Length: 100
Image 1 (cartoon, rainbow, N blue to C red):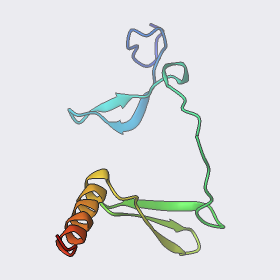
Image 2: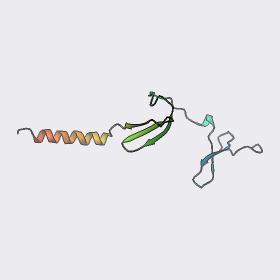
Image 3: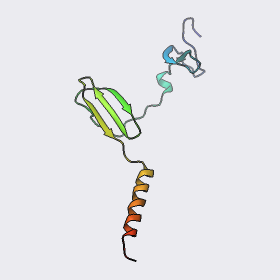
Image 4: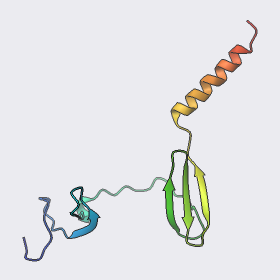
Protein backbone atom coordinates (compact mmCIF):
# COMPACT_ATOMS: atom_id res chain seq x y z
CA UNK A 1 0.00 0.00 0.00
CA UNK A 2 1.09 3.54 -0.65
CA UNK A 3 2.04 5.76 2.26
CA UNK A 4 -0.94 7.92 3.20
CA UNK A 5 -3.38 5.84 1.14
CA UNK A 6 -6.54 4.46 2.68
CA UNK A 7 -7.02 0.81 3.63
CA UNK A 8 -7.45 -1.85 0.97
CA UNK A 9 -10.24 -4.38 1.35
CA UNK A 10 -8.59 -6.99 -0.84
CA UNK A 11 -10.57 -5.88 -3.89
CA UNK A 12 -7.62 -4.20 -5.57
CA UNK A 13 -8.69 -0.60 -4.91
CA UNK A 14 -7.32 1.82 -2.35
CA UNK A 15 -9.93 3.25 0.00
CA UNK A 16 -10.19 6.48 1.86
CA UNK A 17 -12.13 6.59 5.13
CA UNK A 18 -15.73 7.75 4.70
CA UNK A 19 -17.86 9.65 7.16
CA UNK A 20 -20.11 6.61 7.74
CA UNK A 21 -19.95 4.87 11.09
CA UNK A 22 -18.85 1.25 11.30
CA UNK A 23 -20.68 -1.11 13.70
CA UNK A 24 -17.78 -0.94 16.16
CA UNK A 25 -17.97 2.86 16.27
CA UNK A 26 -15.00 3.52 13.97
CA UNK A 27 -14.89 4.85 10.45
CA UNK A 28 -16.07 2.58 7.63
CA UNK A 29 -14.27 2.63 4.28
CA UNK A 30 -16.14 3.93 1.25
CA UNK A 31 -16.65 1.65 -1.73
CA UNK A 32 -14.84 2.35 -4.97
CA UNK A 33 -17.21 3.07 -7.86
CA UNK A 34 -16.01 -0.10 -9.61
CA UNK A 35 -17.23 -2.13 -6.62
CA UNK A 36 -20.78 -0.69 -6.66
CA UNK A 37 -23.75 -2.05 -8.55
CA UNK A 38 -25.69 0.47 -10.61
CA UNK A 39 -29.41 -0.15 -10.94
CA UNK A 40 -31.12 1.78 -13.70
CA UNK A 41 -34.52 3.24 -12.78
CA UNK A 42 -37.52 1.46 -14.24
CA UNK A 43 -39.73 4.55 -14.01
CA UNK A 44 -39.55 8.20 -13.05
CA UNK A 45 -42.13 10.33 -11.26
CA UNK A 46 -41.83 14.02 -10.50
CA UNK A 47 -42.76 14.46 -6.84
CA UNK A 48 -42.44 18.24 -6.54
CA UNK A 49 -41.81 21.22 -8.79
CA UNK A 50 -38.70 21.92 -6.73
CA UNK A 51 -36.04 19.34 -5.77
CA UNK A 52 -37.09 17.02 -2.95
CA UNK A 53 -35.04 17.67 0.18
CA UNK A 54 -36.55 15.26 2.72
CA UNK A 55 -38.35 11.93 2.71
CA UNK A 56 -39.87 9.83 5.50
CA UNK A 57 -41.32 6.32 5.39
CA UNK A 58 -44.14 4.92 7.51
CA UNK A 59 -45.95 1.61 7.26
CA UNK A 60 -48.75 3.05 5.12
CA UNK A 61 -47.34 6.33 3.72
CA UNK A 62 -44.29 8.01 2.23
CA UNK A 63 -43.95 11.72 3.11
CA UNK A 64 -41.86 14.02 0.92
CA UNK A 65 -40.91 17.69 1.24
CA UNK A 66 -39.17 20.23 -0.98
CA UNK A 67 -37.08 23.20 0.07
CA UNK A 68 -40.02 25.63 -0.32
CA UNK A 69 -41.85 23.82 2.50
CA UNK A 70 -44.33 21.91 0.34
CA UNK A 71 -45.07 18.58 2.07
CA UNK A 72 -46.86 15.73 0.30
CA UNK A 73 -48.13 12.42 1.61
CA UNK A 74 -48.15 9.39 -0.70
CA UNK A 75 -50.19 6.35 0.23
CA UNK A 76 -48.33 3.09 -0.24
CA UNK A 77 -49.92 0.33 -2.31
CA UNK A 78 -51.86 -2.19 -0.26
CA UNK A 79 -49.94 -5.27 0.72
CA UNK A 80 -51.08 -8.61 -0.69
CA UNK A 81 -52.09 -9.69 2.82
CA UNK A 82 -54.35 -6.65 3.28
CA UNK A 83 -55.86 -7.15 -0.19
CA UNK A 84 -56.55 -10.85 0.42
CA UNK A 85 -58.12 -10.09 3.82
CA UNK A 86 -60.37 -7.44 2.23
CA UNK A 87 -61.40 -9.79 -0.59
CA UNK A 88 -62.08 -12.62 1.86
CA UNK A 89 -64.28 -10.34 4.00
CA UNK A 90 -66.17 -9.13 0.91
CA UNK A 91 -66.75 -12.71 -0.27
CA UNK A 92 -67.99 -13.75 3.19
CA UNK A 93 -70.37 -10.79 3.30
CA UNK A 94 -71.67 -11.60 -0.19
CA UNK A 95 -72.26 -15.28 0.59
CA UNK A 96 -73.84 -14.49 3.98
CA UNK A 97 -76.46 -12.28 2.30
CA UNK A 98 -77.31 -14.69 -0.52
CA UNK A 99 -80.35 -16.96 -0.22
CA UNK A 100 -79.50 -20.54 0.07
